[in-house]
Image (cartoon, rainbow, N blue to C red; front, side):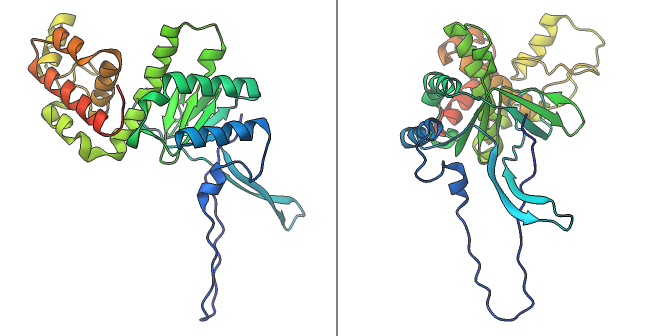
Length: 297
């Protein structure tokens, strides 16, 4: 398990009034294999970038090099690692720190790329295409509340990390692999919503007055009564609130509609929710927004 560290940087200061020349390195270089590297993993990574325009990582360590010794004579290293922020699209919306179990063999890495090429990459164009992909075996996170999480994907500003242990632990069917892809893609759409809030404004405005508000003061509702309240307000599922009946949050709503559209065509949605105009309106808005930002249905 790789330790997750916050990115560190050295700062040079001077008391002199003379101009100080400072060299700036292109951080993109740390997402590439070393120049001239011909090992199998470097070839996979370079070919991936040439084909898809996103950098490919199999470790979250961007830099690690020796800088000298400290006052105790101990070796000192500079280390820069990916610092991923947890976005909408998984089971917890709080920030978290992450550690990764890596794909350690060339065979695993090739299988991971093959999976991405078939199930994920055809859907990710435009803003949906991340700057880089980190393909891992498993993602393990600790939330700021001290809880643990093991998401299938986490999307940050510079990287989308994907956990692919599911495809390695059994002989999965095509349907099962597609279900995993939906979970990964929902995480990316959540990141997209965070980075492009204005684009989703029309969708969010439809049910804005209901978010996080109490549905009813009744102490007990049948499942059909609860669902009728939700559907009439433009929601497709509850938020599982512990303290009564509440409408979902914005994050839950985005998550649920993204999942709905990944699992159904607009025609199927229009048939299923024919009696609920707000749902039909929001499904169309979500579809159009996702498409405009680069999701390929």
